[in-house]
Image (tube, rainbow, N blue to C red; front, side, top):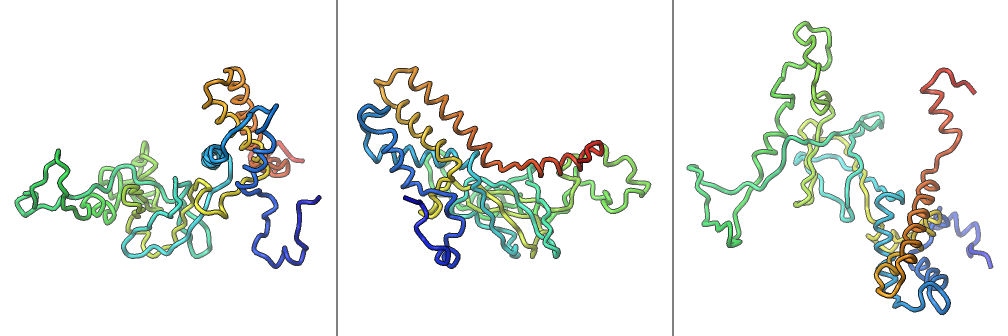
Length: 295
């Protein structure tokens, strides 16, 4: 029986284009129960909810460094210079801004500042309420002066505002870039991720520009996302089997180690398949790097 159950016209007019390369997590769990669970099989019996738990953990682990689960969002940066983190955000891959030609320019993280909570104080620096640092009494806070000052400043190393990035021939700039920290040798702007408040803050020179956030999710945000690429299906099965066997007290250690080894091998295979490296692309890169390679 074939796996494709819809006609070509229904496929091209539907909203599941390219969906054949994936299988749902629910289907992967069903296939695991058939292949690995039962009499005379590696797992004699197990509750389905246990398999579901390990399958979801496997999806998370594989999403971080095996699946290509990178997402991208685009916004026009408002005057507040802030962007809310996406609901399914785990970690960022890259932040860029797009110019009028659609070319992306990378934005670098600000590593010399932060956005701490500012305790509300009176003019004589007295805290406005009796805050018990050990008792957990609620404290009054406001926006941080540290990040506000950083946003509005012309950032250069040690306040060296006399660096002219457009003219290297000016006499007073000769030699001044030697040893310059790379984070100060660019004019693309900077950002700071405040994970506690769920916001990304940007420097003032990025106001009004189109910001693109590329980030990693864990593939568990929605039912539609809970899909396994067919190149990584075996890696998920091996992960679940090893996870189940390693949590059982009566399983011989050599069996656990065997499935640990198989899980690692399946993960490496999935990475290679999903890397999607083509010989023609490698040749093109090598031709650009070395004039000795022709055809």
